[in-house]
Length: 362
Image 1 (spheres, rainbow, N blue to C red):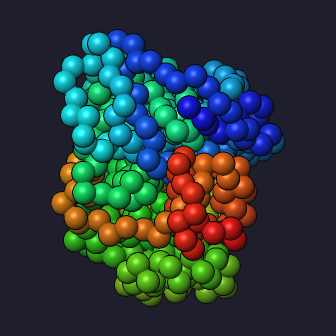
Image 2 (cartoon, rainbow, N blue to C red; image 1 turned 30 degrees about the horizontal axis):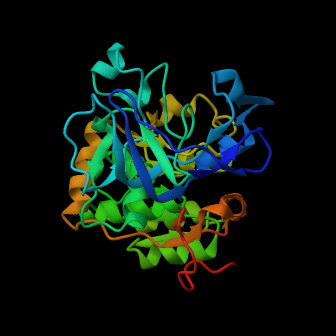
Image 3 (spheres, one colour; image 1 turned 45 degrees about the horizontal axis):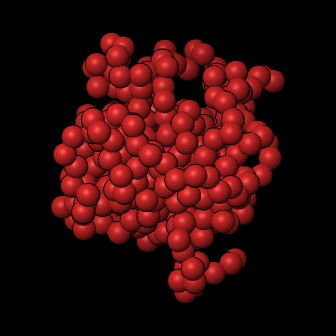
């Protein structure tokens, strides 16, 4: 097998050839058909993210060891099955749930492996999908992706699941007023598709980039606002018919958190999803004065991924823009993402040769 491996935090990914894998116990080996490129992969390459006030969260301090193969948005076809894995349909294409936990704690038993205190996340704590092949610890993490193109199914494991879980947290307000989405990257555009798929009110989208605002409008946003404009808050309120009761921040930076607090209505909810970094910029008295709930949302559960995949297989989710790249260009694609040059999702394909304009160099 071959892969793109991170050997040193802050350095480039390196191509590497390894011996083919043999599954043990309940493991399943899949040939990777698509691997999405996510902002989390950038944080992993950098070794952590900014916590504000001069502090930083370092992956090394949290138990992440190198080398590791990045990539947690992965689809593939079964090539080998461990002796304890049970019956698996090897003709079915699968999307992989990447957020596995220890499997034995109370949190995992409750179905929230993504919140396990000793996680085993794919592409973080164990090797991920920037590779020709991947090892999955148990068949329960495999979800039928029949009828879905690999490049469409792969992002569902993170951008799809993350937005699906975040939307559930504002379900009480979904039929009363348009929500506000901050950030029109892969997560924001996926959220637009999920809102449409569930017949929920379409949102107002906020983004500093004109091309991303245009993409959001094309995807069905009722308005797209530049937060740097002096009257940005007033524009959002006008588009929402008043101060919004729900704001989802897909960026998670100090300026976006400040904008979220300025724009949300009294009694409203702010869901913070993004990990761009920084510290909360609001005065503490604003929380009780506005009676605002600020809540984090980190990916989603195994059950939620099953619900999402069922929705996708029924044809209710329109694909977000994707662009395919060969696996060997993984580091260059991460650079493009860091520079804001990716609309929607970039997809790595291990066995890609020339596939036309989608794979052409920028």
